[in-house]
Amino acid sequence: VQLQASGGGLTQAGGSLRLSCVVSGPTFSASGMAWFRQAPGKEREFVACTNWSGRMTDYRDSVKGRFTVSRDNAKKTGYLQMNTLKPEDTAVYYCAANRWRDSVCRINTYEYDYWGQGTQVTVSS
Image (cartoon, rainbow, N blue to C red):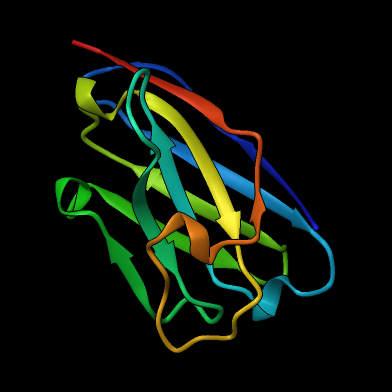
């Protein structure tokens, strides 16, 4: 299973970006998926997740109301729509997938088996 994240870039505060994560492999429709981010000098942190069906989602408090996580199982692609971006959102964003057909989605890094390479998001003030 391989994950390929894209969509990062440079934007001003208040702007929007949409990240995509294309997953290769046969089990995406039975996998939970999440987005994490890591800023320089900081630990990787949870941003948003969705369970295998997309019906369950969760977000870190600082992005609630601004970010939306979704997925298209037919396209084997996950998305993170980021609106009203702030300078503190600047980080490398990683998508991750696991092998659990859960009713909930997972928020810890150790609960994910596969990781994308990361895409840089930079928000200027």
